[in-house]
Each structure stands twice: as C-alpha cells, then as structure tokens.
Image 1 (cartoon, rainbow, N blue to C red):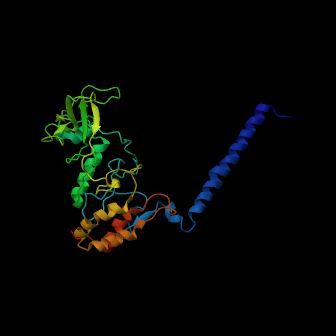
Image 2 (tube, one colour):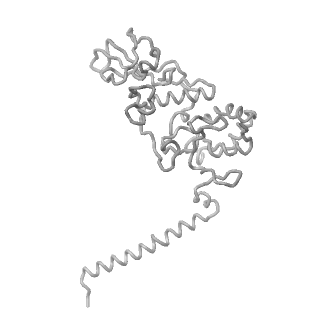
Image 3 (cartoon, rainbow, N blue to C red):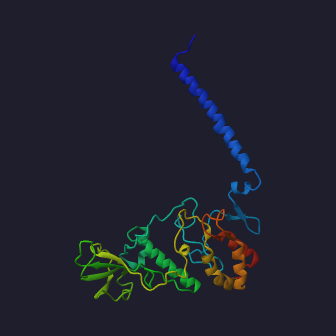
Length: 307
C-alpha cells in the first residue's frame, strides 16, 4: 500500500534531519577538532596564548593590550600600542572601530571645557577624527621627545579648520570673507587662534553652541612636514580595536624612552625589536609589523624594569 504523499514528505524530512545531524553535528565537529591537534596548529586553536616567565598566561599573540597605569598614562618602560576603540581599550568583548572618515574635521565644543571628558561621555561634546589625530600626535611627540606636528593640526593639538563666512560664487566658495572662525579652538581655552588673519580678516575663536555651518569649512595645512615624526599608526586605531601590532617605525621611535627606563643601551632594545619584527605575509600581503605584546614580554625577560 502506497503511503499518502504528506507522510512520505515528513519521512523524507526526518531522514534529512538525521543525516544532516550526523554529518554536521558529529562528523564535521570531530573532523575540525582533529585538525586542531595537528602539530603547528594546536597552539593557534587554543587562542595563541602567551605565558610569562612564571608559566602563567599573560595574553594572546592575537589581541593587543594597553600598557598604561590606572589613570591611563603610558608606562615608560613599555612599548606603547596603537589607540583602540574597543570598549575602554583592547576589550575583546567589545571589538569596534571609530567609524569616522577623513571628512570628520569639525568638533562639537563642550559647554564647560573643564568638564569636557564628562560631556564627551554624555555625547553633548565630541572631538572630530582630525582633532583626535592631532591631540594623539602631540601626546606621542611629548612622550618620545620629538615634534608631534602634523599637517592640518594646530600647535595646540586640534584640527586647524576655519569657517569662512561671506558671499559665495556659484561653486560655493566665499569670494569676500566678512568673518572667519577657527571652529575647533574654543574661546577661554586658547589665548588666541592659531592663525591671526585669513584673507585680510581677523580670525576669531569659537564659542560652544554657535553654528558656523553657514561658512565655508576650510582646513589649513600649516607648515608641518609632509612626513611627520609620529607615524600614522600611533594616532589611528585599527578596524577591530584589538590589533596587537605596530609599525617598525613606531616601535623604533619608542626605543630611546624604553632604553632609558630600563637602564640599557638603545641598541639592545632595538635588537629585541628586530627579533620581534615580522615581514609581509607571504612576502607581499600587508606591511612589516611588530607584535607589542610579545615584544614587551621579551623586554621584561631580558631587561627587567627596576623602577
């Protein structure tokens, strides 16, 4: 006797469920687990964990760390990682990018500059990507004893951006400025704008809450060198916020400070950096890089800090 079609369809579905459960729920996971036991792959399958001199796990080769004190200040004996937007920094449960582009150059100024951090947290104030880059560059320059100057940045570490107000031509450019405002330099915070005049008009500082969008937004390049002393990866975050690598140039920039803190020669620190430098993947993918977590661990083993 031939079974009704609806029963045959249900039986076929049950058979498919059983077959797929065995193949994908048992055989496939066991096969993947077996591959992880192959020599050379097992360590990666376990998270690429790194152990310290005492045998305890101190991190992963795949996830960066912030080498700062409880107040967020850089520890001078350690090579510093790049900025991170993952949570409060290098939080693997909150991997994230800043999602800001190169045209993000105008800040939202705080009503009370003394409480700027709180207003940024409350999202009533915001630093543009340009100002973030400028302030980080100044901070790294001060830490390493080099110039933090960058194109389109003021000496004070904010974006050098003007709002030029006045009649415009058909292309939208101001033909005769009547007012010029340095939109990222707040009155009461700066003594005077980074630029005294622009096209014959005195430059004003900006006031919180005022809208300068009616003007033509003009970034000012300034006199900073085309290749700043502070590398780009020192002032920008990675897409994941967890990248443990920095460029060899940024690592070498930090070598004198790390050597002074540990009481060794700069050449000794540079040698450890060279040992931890990796080239392009397969010889042509990506850029040369240094794993900061591994580097700092090796520095601790070879040249312990006695601060």
